[in-house]
Length: 464
Length: 144
Image 1 (cartoon, rainbow over the protein chains, first blue to last red):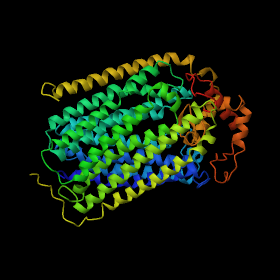
Image 2: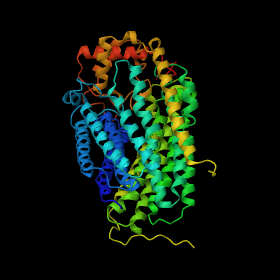
Image 3: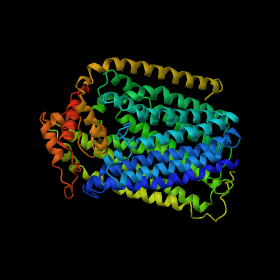
Image 4: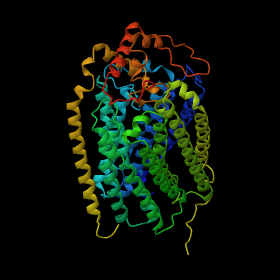
């Protein structure tokens, strides 16, 4: 750690991991409800578990992005953070807001929560992923503004690197696009049209800039490859991301009341969305192969390579599977969508946050560069457990999806939704088992922070 | 990447490409906005439909169901539920009203929301309006 103020990242990373645990536990509850319909009913209905599962994910990724920024921006800018106190204050504001929101989901019926938080004054609740009470959304905006101000001032004052500029651009885009969460017209088509400006333009747009910047930072650090080379790759990758991804939003505009031409725009451009992810994989492996030093933190390198590969598979390949309009006509809103969502979020965003945590946390905890060997071995076990089980979760959901689409939509005698769900329950059971393995991986991951923390630091291998 | 392709060229492609395709997206959005009145059934948005949409939102229906294919995949698609229930608002209202408080042993069940008749009617109106949006022929069949 080169600058004192980088230390503010630590609580952000810890909160991220705590919410990660909550996300997975509620994921397992939902998975069980798929096959054991009245599990925890009516105390925790499926929709409540799902809100906790998805909202915890979004919030812990945001904690991760903020922690990553507070860690890497001062180091890149070669100056202390503009206002460390503001970062610490905003941490508590965000944590309390997140905690109260989750408590609200769990303790009272959603309609009561809407009343308590006066949703009537500015109705924004009840849309997928944006279920937070309006007051929470306002809180998110305040936290985001304070965060952007802090990071922006730091960047302005210090060295302007490409990593910092791209990161700042991504974060500013994240904040601006979130404002569409406040636009909820009565017209369902308009509602859906602009809802995607938050959801799609986040995960298939500006978040990829954040992903690219964090990955570039870690690759510069662990490989020692010349910054010029990495920054050039970064520009090309994010150029392809936005060139394909912005018009690629059209793949959500096939069946929601929007004009038919979106089937062409959406299909053609979103079919190219895997390209930047493929480039990212080639680039990550290239940089590691051309490394000029052997960094002692092997776990961080593993996460960095893993995120490139899994983002390509989850976002790229599984996205492409159902992105063409004639295919999507049958797969839209099925378990195929769920399969893609799981691997894409894990590969692109969960893993990039775990990459920066893996890289930064040893220094934040007083190490010079890396954890002990024992700790790293455990962390790498958790990498494989979580990643392989996520591959299986995705495969089982894909199996469920193919059967669902056939039985409900393709066959000559289409069957009702619930009848089909019963016939594919085997796949849901298998998914739940894979989910339990994921939880075991997560427990091992957390254990890696405590095991071997008194052992001496790992030393880099000498290559002959 | 060879030496002839410089970082500043990459940067220009990024800024130029992003700006161009963003403007194209805005232009397409403008065109879509012009085309929507003929497709989105906006003439049917009465105060009841608007109330129905609010009730839909404030009970997080999207947390289990899909609507025009978007939402959660735990419960049936509702964009065409009006037609699936035989073009009958009464059937929709009766279904929602009759959900058991304690659920159905071993099976998925919709919660009992204790709606008033006015709320039930508004919800059914909202679902009827949704079913009449021009969705380019989606879903493929009545099962949603």
